[in-house]
Length: 435
Image (cartoon, rainbow, N blue to C red; front, top):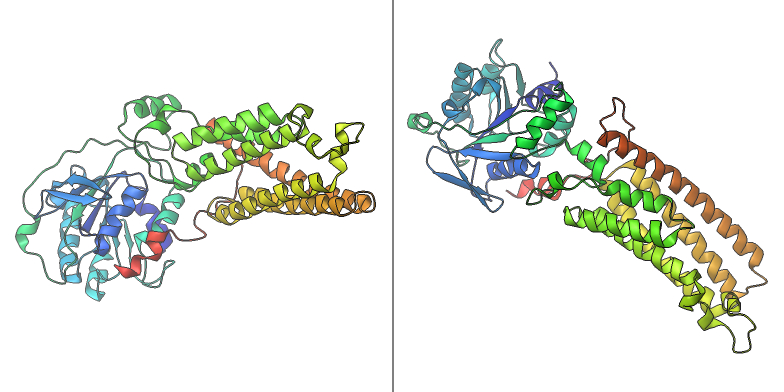
């Protein structure tokens, strides 16, 4: 069995335990503990010497050993201990019927690997060289990809067995006594819709796969407090609909719908799409106001002897200032383009074409400011080029809009959006070498 296949099997279990987690942020085991919480998976630590373990600002009641797990035969175990201690943990895990183990770098030697991979010992063993990092297979580096590969979607708790990562062998008493009965459920991928909804209504927490979260909310999966994501519907399609139908309806589709969608994204804790939708809401409201005579946006530039306020549209001042407005939007979209490298391909295409489109329109208005009559033909070509870019923007926008609605309604088929959330490792993963 390949290590990739073993990792998928590992994350197919409904419960997990981590031997070697720590309350000390300087310990590598603490990073593993925090990683589970960063995936919106609650954790119950098990520590042979401490009543509680603290991580991410929260205190968690502890139980003492693997034998205290309520359902060991349904629990995959990550291990972060010195090799001598790891061998003892593996022997206990084997006796309890633990299905899969993940041996973190530094937790094993040749004897440990040989024992773990004995025929009949475990269904899956993740260990050894390889993975995406330079130190071997690690949950921090390879965990999210394995979760996606397993199409992981669960309700319940993660049980953390904690022990400071010291290079000394724990005493035999470290694995005696104690019992915990956490309340947990697993949402099987084959469960019927009615059964899933019934169980989700009574669940204390809900975790969806990072890929599905990213598709639904246009943002890498993040951790927020409270249950607002279970209270409110997904606002992303609202804002996308406003964006797609904004042309010709600047105030109500472009302005109002995108403001509503952006505000709800902010309430749900999805900062990136919130910033995007709210800034574009302001853009469409500003653009619409510019075209409404009652706002006197261009009338203020009309010459004193003008017979119509529309003559202000042809002045150097109006075209130059409007070009700067479009340049500011281009710079905003350039920032969004870089940030979209942590979202998906569709979102990246949207911002790439927006950057090109705003750049071309900026050039068009500055050309008109330089010589409105002489540069009219050149400006027209630039405007047509910008229109072509925005056509591609709309195609990508409609694609992701349909993809989100299909995912929300749980259609048997889905549109891929090209997940990019794993293109760059998260900050805590890049900093793991410092712990």
